[in-house]
Image (cartoon, rainbow, N blue to C red; front, side, top):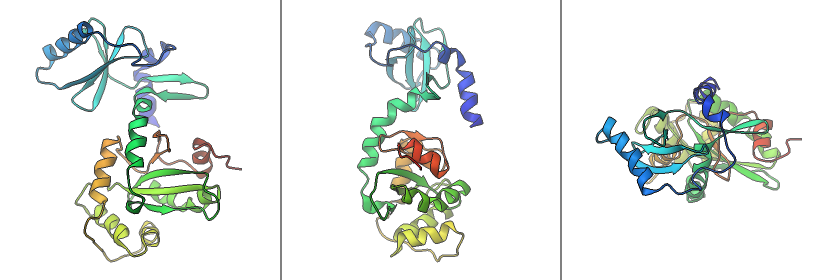
Length: 252
């Protein structure tokens, strides 16, 4: 939360000036794009420059740098703002860059086979689902896992993907491989999250490395990382009632 607020206040001027039209609706002319590219290359020769878009603030442009970072540049290319731009809405701030990534995230998550997930489903009607990148040795992951019965009772299915924070290979990855390769993956994952000693297992073509890579592509940098069906990434652990509300499910 502190990191989010720090980013917010670092971009206060951007938030305060938020306007009504969506970023990227107005095409960037080749001449304008050339001004921005030339300015960046003058300061940092060789730096990769990706897509250039209009931003939600007239006269300010979004520029993708180095394949992963987005900065905001003035039209003359003389000023760069690095930080997170938020749109102010009722009862919340909306991360504009994250919002733009949602369709891509939803598409990539939908492409993951259910057989490559560990899924905890409601016994009754499933109203919606949440996709969670998880690690075994993560305190908040374990806290969320203990609330799965409550989430299931509200009709929320929990779909787990693996994200060993220490990378692959690592002891954390080995534990996740053990769960995914078990004859009873859901039971084994619960045992591991409860701190039980479980003998390592392995199997050919397990999805741990691929899911770790997918998490990185989607912007995951910690666990638990929660995604709604629309591709929105939620801010880490949330109590069951709050998570249900974020998913549009009445927790009562």
